[in-house]
Length: 387
Ligand code: LRH
Ligand code: MN
Ligand code: MN
Image (tube, rainbow, N blue to C red):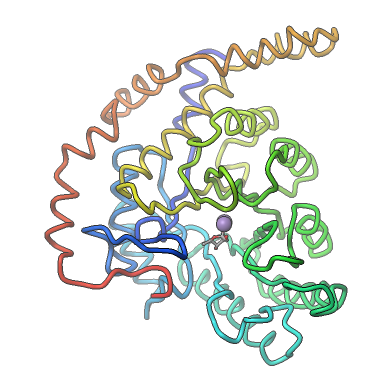
């Protein structure tokens, strides 16, 4: 690919930001609060718009319901538009209610299952109002002890709830089914891996696809293989990007293992799936517990861009020739040459050609936005987790 073609592909890239990354977060040991955090969904959107202003590639914000509950979702979508962004995926939340102690849609109690499914249906109503395409489902459901509940019944209950929600989706709406190996359930999780998610999505139909959260696997899992498999079967719907060292760490994407991020983006480019028209949502799902939030999110967006640029630079002809000739080292070298390229000058050039600052973090720091929000938001309570 020529440098110009690489730049053209990068200029069309879109990365979706999670509203919750802008609020205070922490571990179960402590939440450290930071000055200037948003007090409302509107302020989270305003912060996300700032990230888009400095990077040019983050035009949408995912909401989490009820953390981002408002009276009028149409008005929230209009507010986002005024800020220069749009509302993206609607994330459901069936994991923060006492009723869900034994599960949400897989709970042995039909009344709890009804309540959980109704929440998912309400999220589709919200999508109608916001114009969002994607409903993102993550279930904390599972068990802690062998024998606690019937594993097979729980799969049936899951399938029943998913079917009801799937049938409620409009023609242009989709369901993204996220999986997670463990936590908060420690013995069984009802959607623990991509295979389980894939099987349910296959049964549901074309509007159901898998969401890969990069932090939700066992150590050493080959995530790019999952990407390749799901791309081939048209069942890859989205990513929740973040980094992990140990479990679901939710650190900045590309921080723990930039090479893994490159390998993932390499499969995306190989599958011609980068362009927004291809329908794969590249979302961040991160928490910034100790670092300043907006610059951390800008940094994360840049990390995805850098991995993408390197993936675009892979010489596909050289790679394929080496592969076909059985030239193991040559094929590996073709990948590594691209990975080892410093793409920062190319991205700086691209930004300047788009009227952006070559260094988005520095431009943000100079802007005075942080000082302004610290002053403006000095009084209130932060919105977010559990708000
Ligand atoms: C679960 C998860 C899921 C939630 C988000 C806050 O660990 O990744 O995507 O919606 O975190
Ligand atoms: Mn996630
Ligand atoms: Mn997670």
